[in-house]
Length: 350
Image: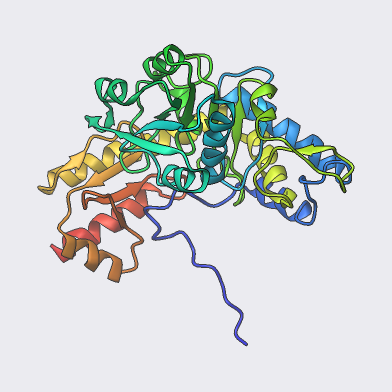
């Protein structure tokens, strides 16, 4: 049998994952067989998970953060809705999220039996009037996105948190991708900027940890108590995670990456990625195509569908937004020479 090899990242333009940092790769391999889902047995990785949450709290402006390392943003978003549902005092709970919210919230609504109400957008961000119209006495959660998947936009998080508080609901911020770039911008998005309750923030995206290494943060442990179930055959007495057995690889790699890169390394990474995104948008517009202004390092390009198909035939892993634009995410592996090679193919094909 031939041994399969993973594809490299040399033409991957639309992924929100990247090559792990060497320290993260090494840590993942060393802790591959450990299980933070059984902290009584695997004490070392359990301590590392506490370190991971402390470090994520530093990134997200929250001292004494509660939380855990999840399988990714989908699990963390589902858990945030679950916390709000379990905490809410209604038999017909709903939550409000902007139309730009990740599709994992649709999964959460389906799995948990909570109504999802989708608010309209204004300039790719949540429209506050639209959100207000959807909130009622059965609303248990208001969601804001800090770094949308398609356009990298940041919702007005402080205003959304105030609206949630007025309604007696929780506020959740999905910063799965944006969490490791936003600390170096002027956006208001984290626990220090607004009275938010929970956050999704993924080390395995811009954090350069190995996959899977997501993150769920909560302002206090009492919110995680809403998730707790008894674990009678383990040494620990309860568990708040959605999955049971988890590889310690994600936990260890998240700690290793953040210890190596926070904050200076991540800031340098953001500056390079944003510079590449701004440069690409200008080059694209000089060629007569429209590009959505990259507020964060994501460039949406109004390429014809047949051009996107031709670029994919050339090996470029280029996805489309819901509106049909080509979508380039300037991750750490997306270098200026790589983008120049991409533009050379655009020139040749047009």
